[in-house]
Image (cartoon, rainbow, N blue to C red; front, top):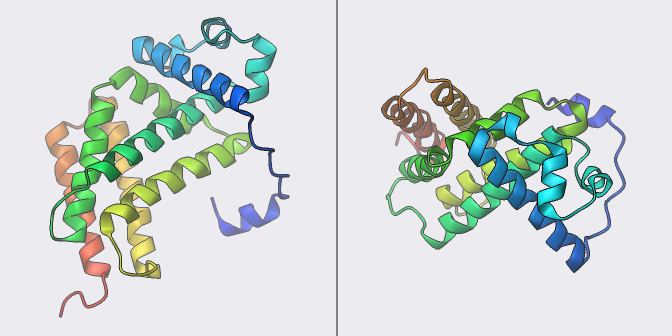
Length: 210
C-alpha cells in the first residue's frame, strides 16, 4: 500500500480494549479457526461452524470478524505473535545479521510447513483481502518486520536502506511460501532463496564493504 493511499483513508477511531471475557472469547474463536483450517484449509473454515464450535452466537462472531477473510488474517496475526514469542525465547546464534534473519525465517517457515492446510488458508486469506482488511494485513506486515528486526539485533534504529532490505525480504518470504504451497518450489529451493535475499541485510549495514 502506498503512502498516498494510507493518507487518503480517513483515520478510524481506536477500538476500546477488550474486556477479559471478550479477550477469552476472541481466543476461542481464533483457536477454532486455526483448528478447522488445519484440518481442511480455507474451505473448511465456515463461519457458522466456527461460531458453534467456539460457543458464540453467529452475530457475535461477525462483530469480532466481519468475514472469513478477516478471521483468517487475524488467525495469521495470532500465529505470527506466537512464533515471535517462541523465537525470542530461543534466538538465532549466527554471528552475521543476515544469517540470523535467514535462520529465523526458515524456523518460521518450518512451523508453517508442519501445518500446510493452515498455512494455505492464511495465505489465501491475505491474497483475497480487500481494503476493508487493510488494518489486519498491515498488522501482519508489522509483525513480520518486527521478527526480522529482532533477528538483526541492531544497535540503533534501522537505516532507510535496511528498512528497504527488510521489505524485499518480506516480499520474498511471502512469495516463497506461496510457491511452496502450490508445489512449485521445494523446501531446499526456499532455503536458498531466503538465504540469498537475507544477504541484503549485511550489504546495507553501516560499514559494509569496508
